[in-house]
Length: 127
Image (cartoon, rainbow, N blue to C red):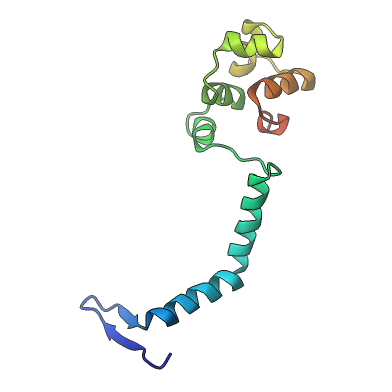
């Protein structure tokens, strides 16, 4: 790396120019040595293997920004009507509406049935 040049931009930013081979070597070394990158790759591998849950951004926005219950957010994300979700979970539509609105609390068994009907794990429905 003896062919490195540097200059300062009119805005005062110091810039460095180096041969492409040197740049590629630095990038490759950083990718191998970076612990954050290694951790991210491991997490991605777990997600792809189905061993790690993810929450879609739309669901996060609906619960965090819009204040919807996780049950309602997941139902809307899955594009299910209340009657369809209720039927799939073996519950009444009015009961599911009460759960979504927070006027009733569901038992663990009920919430598990709803989570299964939504294709998610129970922990994604309860705080």
